[in-house]
Every structure is written in structure tokens, then in C-alpha cells.
Length: 432
Image (cartoon, rainbow, N blue to C red):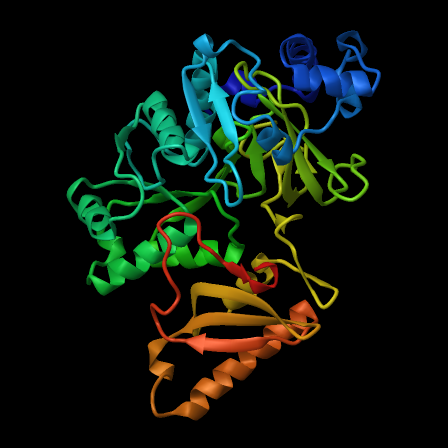
């Protein structure tokens, strides 16, 4: 189902004209209402009249997460605080959180793009959506909640955690859609098995998963263990929250709601725009947000773009599934390592569970990488030789892909701490 055919099926020329018109309006608003952006544009010798079409987007300054922190809490507001109806914030792993604000119209846009996303995944009015994303300052829970209600679906706002209650409501309420992080979905599948619940007996049929990178192997594992079709929803608080893009049933990239969020791909080192199809850092400009619009926000996520029409009927540009993050990339002995690379390997190994952690440390001047991975319990028996064979095979496959030596530590089931939100995949002790 296509929720908004008028916007999701526009011709490329129509979309570019709409984006250009909205960009001109946005630039005029932030120039006159946000001192930070006025100063940035003046440094570049730009005035609002210099931005005429969407092709002029690359003339504008970038915005970074540090800019949001430097203007904490309300320095990037483009509206008076009296017109702001909601404030969210990131959890903030270091220092102060990054704040985002919404006007009443922004909340309507938020609901609209999530409704489009859910419809693209096959969710409809007859569905019951169990929202196991966290509610609160994190945008995931309320974002999916409002979008599902706009779509006309019933919402079960259970929030994150309380796995026993999640399983009870899946059974008693007959939830047909589960929305949470992929790592929590994997944990829930594991808990269902332990509780003796056969997922094929549940009405559950669709999973809407996001808020953390996950591989195709993880997707297939979750689909098999929960007996569902899984969809990757992408978003970030700074842009709006979930609903920036999503996979449709074709599974060939995530459709970007580009009438609201204009994407670019840049080289993360030179900051130069890259041609369509090339992998680089994803950048978004929020051309319709009122309370806290952003110009060319650097997401640090690595992706690519494809503007070819999709077989589903949508013509919106598609972004490739996030490969990793330019700032989460680990450099170990001169080699670039992404956690997603390790996950892809582990998901192809039957003996490995979808729970792992990377421990980076330094011995003298040498960096080390330890990969801890849960292995099927049957290998932790008196047959040490079998465990050693599995360990050797996993270690060899990871080293072949990464090109560096690693320490491989198989651990028993439930050894690695489970997360009710975003999984902590990397512990880098070099920074401690």
C-alpha cells in the first residue's frame, strides 16, 4: 500500500521543483531567525537570494552534532519557544544531550512520514502494533506510536524492556506488528524459545526494526526465529526521528521521504558531493521542519543513493542500507574495521548466536581486537576439540575479511549482556 501517492510517486522533475521551492523558503527562515545559520552563511558570503534551485544546496554550510551541542539547549530554534509543542533529546554518550524541537506542524509531518513508512512495510488499519521502542526523550517510541495511529492501526504502547510482559501481550493481544531495535528483537526471539512459545502460533507477521546498524544476516536470523517479515526503518532524532526512510516489500533500498528530508552523499574526508551510486556519508536537509530545521546535517552514516523508480511504484530516492558510521569506524593497526563486517560473518555461521561484542585494547604500542561471540551450548561440553574447531573456523573467517589478526573468545549462552535499547557492540578501552 502507498500511503501518500501524490508525494511518493512524483516525477523526478516534480520532486526537484518541490524541493527547490521548500529549500528557498527554509534558507530565508533560518537566515533571519537563527543567528547561528546567519553567521555561517555570512562567513561564506551567502545571502538567501543566492539559493534558487535544489542544485544550490551544496553552496550551504554543513551542520554537525557538535553544532547542536554548542547551541544547547535552544540556540538553533527557528521559532519562539511559545510555538514549540515538544522537545526530544538524544541520550548523549558524552557531555550534554543534543536537543531537537517540534512545532505542531512538525508533529504532523512526523506522524505522516511514519505512517508512510508503516504502509510501505504492509501495515494497515487492521493491524495491532506493539511498540517496544523506548518512550521518553528518545524519539522511537512516540514516533512509531503517532504514525501507527495516523495510519489507523491499534497501538500497544508497552515501551522497551519487560520481556515477560512483551511475550504475554504478543499472545493475549494478538499483536501483528512488532517495533523495536533489531538486537532486542533477537533477544525476544531467544526468550520466546526459552518460554516454550512457538512463534508460528502468534499472529505476529511484521517487524519494524531500527535505531542501530544491523546486517542482512541479522535480518534473516530474526525473520526465521520470529517467523515474520522484517523491515529496516531509518531515522535520527536530529532530522525528525524514525520515518526518514524505510525498506518497502521489494527490499531494494530504503525509500527516503525526500519531500521533507533532502539527502546528499558526500566524501567524509573532502566533504565534496559524490555522484549517485557511490558510497559516502549521508547528509540531510530538513526542508519543511519549522521549530528546529537543519541545513546539511552530517549523519556520519555511510550509504549511497539510487533515484531509479522502484518496482513498488514509488519514485522517491532510495538509500542503501547503512554500511557503518564514519565516526564509529575502528582503526586497528591501520585497518578500518566496522562492527557490521563482523556481524555479517557471524550471521553466516550456524554455531554462532546473534550476540557478540568487540573489545578493543592496547598492549604496549599494539592494538588488539577481541571478538566475543556466543556459541551454541552443545559445544560447551567435554568435547573440547569440537569447540576448538568452531573457534578456529570463526577466527579464520573474520581474519580473512578484516585482514588483521584477532582474539576469538567463544562464550556460553547469555554471557553477553542483553540490551532493551541499542546494543553496545564495541568496548574500546584505548580511550579510557
